[in-house]
Length: 287
Image 1 (cartoon, rainbow, N blue to C red):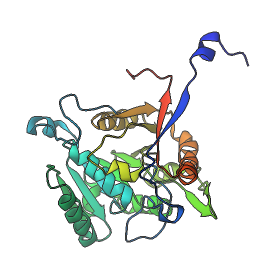
Image 2: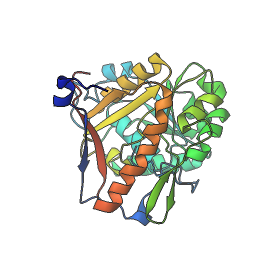
Image 3: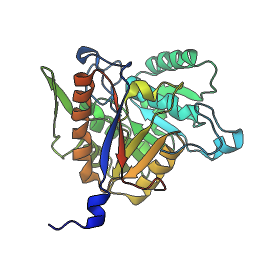
Image 4: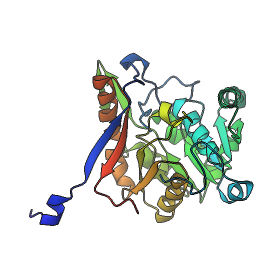
């Protein structure tokens, strides 16, 4: 197939930014799972700053009132709690959910104690409480994502539901992507909550960096969904986080490749003793 000269000169390139002082050994690599569920999915490798807000500082009460509330179902694991911290740091009201409300309370208390100088509006609840928010995130291990979504189906009809899990397993020193029966974790969740608008996002963002409010994350967030309104809503969510950039990656069928690519990022973490953050070059910054 012919390739235009312009395309040859300006290809889309992948840049993996590394943080060599923040290495997790292979055995220490954790999943995007609730702490009370030991499954692993390797998704610790989960867009533009709020114009008036420095890193980690919440906007005014007026700006806060305009932001959607976010409920994180199964949010007591590393990635779910880290996402809660980051979104709350830019003024969003976050409900951190768990099968056990008391487990969620324990995690929220720890998070608030870790960042006492930040006005973090994070409240604990069970998964039903989290699913009543404006936007819902499913942050359980990949094998539990679809059934967990079904358990809160009555609360998410018509809402944007974000999945951030990756179906992965580990064989020796290698991370192997798994393909669920419907092709991806996101597609499996959509099948369980057909009245919701499911989007895949945050699969490639390292959980440790996501929850560290001392530094911004220079990372692209890949988003895919069969619903234009869901892509738009997640894009607006991402835009409030400093140094994030939201990228529309098409329909939900692309979640298969997006989720599987996390295995590559985790392998790079192990090989180079670092954590990588994903940036794509060749795309205008104005998107």
